[in-house]
Image (tube, rainbow, N blue to C red; front, side, top):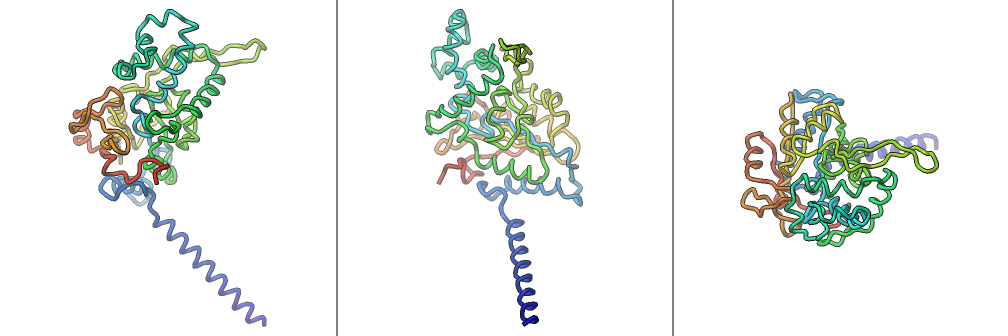
Length: 342
């Protein structure tokens, strides 16, 4: 009987070991980017991450240098027909103008109040930042967060009828997750308001608020009616995180040059230039919106329709070729765009 029990125990141990090995083999061989079509772009991503995290590789990057930066609008979630944060500010603007009636006669607020989306989309980046900053002025950071959370829960995209946080790109979520699984820290470096993106970044992308770098409005330290300390939002912009402002913000807020950068427009050009000009293995990638059926198609690179919201001109496409940056075709490189797709 004892021999039989020993033999049975041995067989159970062998079977358990076999199952563990089989399970690890499946995990090791699983596809980290299932929503990406097979091809050069997907291969380049996987190989870059493998090479920079393999101690035996000449492209190995020490853990402290594994930083990847992502633009948000048009790179991580849908930004058309208008930036989601701009929609939030447009919804709040009437209340702001009621308190400050003079704004109704001043541009760009006059155009914003018209709710003419075509006219609003043609405003300059500077004007859009003014519109996005005005509704925040005078609010405590706690009140702003609660207000933004409520809006994000109730507002719906006009085309899909879904919450804006649902319109995140599944392939990019997979990419961020794969980077983090290999020791990379993923930062969002966005022209959007830093406090606004921090409200939902962790739940939506897995990026904690301290790893969100955005357009930064000033805050002032004050005391409420009960004498408790509060931080009050201001309309004064301290840091515009667009164009050259992105590498400047990366230096000020992160303190290290990233190893990889991902964007989708001219506003990300300098971030990719700064990232890929460093020593060692570097990676740059741009998302090209060329799928009007599943999302949107705009450029004007490659003859796509022109836009003022996240423009991707031919000059940027040409620079990507010269610099060795990868251009993601939504139509060709992504088998799925949304998590809610069947």
